[in-house]
Every structure is written in C-alpha cells, then in structure tokens.
Image (cartoon, rainbow, N blue to C red):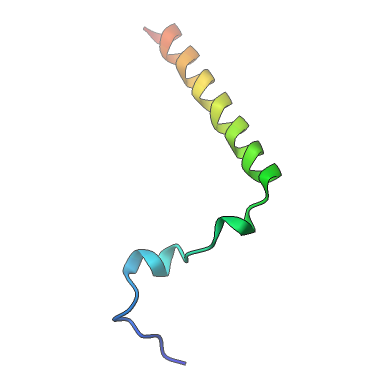
Length: 50
C-alpha cells in the first residue's frame, strides 16, 4: 500500500504521531525524575570543572 507523501512530512515519517494517552503517568513520572537527576548531575559537574 503506497503512502500519500503529499499529506505527511519527513518528521512525521521519522517520529510517527502518537497520542499522550499511550504514555502512562508512571512512565512519564519516571522520565521526569531521570531528566531532573541528569540536570542536577550536569550542574554539579559544571560547578566542579570551573
């Protein structure tokens, strides 16, 4: 089945649109905690390397 390339962009092909309903709040909270920890460790490393 051929895709209608006129209706989709390159980014839509790479990152297909998926609704936020597919992401559970538990998984979302876990990623928020991971990103927060990475930000804290990055700030600590920057402070120590200056």
